[in-house]
Length: 262
Image (tube, rainbow, N blue to C red; front, side, top):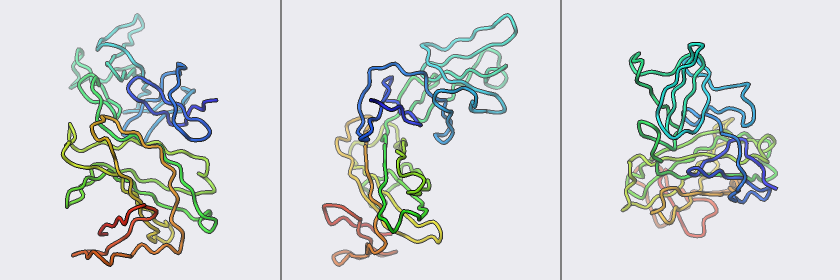
């Protein structure tokens, strides 16, 4: 049986469903239209419309429609339609510079263009965490970064959130990470860098690294289970490498001797 996630993920026009074993599967069922998302941090409940996302004091709904158009109703209300992400606002459409004939489409982070007609190249993450028994009451700060293999280790995008095993042990976290250039630089190698800190007090616990293969794909999907490093993990092990600034750190739980300068 498929479970619809609390934060649904889009892959083009195909919805994803998640089984109880956390593996991602495609589903043929037609689900209701998803939430409208602004800056990837605000979202509505999946099945209810009682709590709609407010933008400039207006309640906005998200739809899909094929073309940009405007329609007036007898009661004086109107609506504005966008290609991949329709914004239907209560009582008033969003207009550009108060121009009655020009509308603005506010796109999801995975789309761009004047009508949200194009898809951004991105990494789609579905992550579940595991913690050792001594860490199950510890509040963690998690930072996930999309980086490249340049000497500067450029951070293209990142997300930051807290994790508590007692609260989030069954939670799967869904995020998009976008590349900083459009299109992405095909000559570079990209990877996912994860930093984990104890939040109170702020103590560094460890870091993990995941390589992104098949970089020719416009959308790369990761289904990850991350084990939070134990309290006694010693990541400072860089006998063959020295950092000019900062200190050398060994990644936790990697099959190769992967290190970085912190």
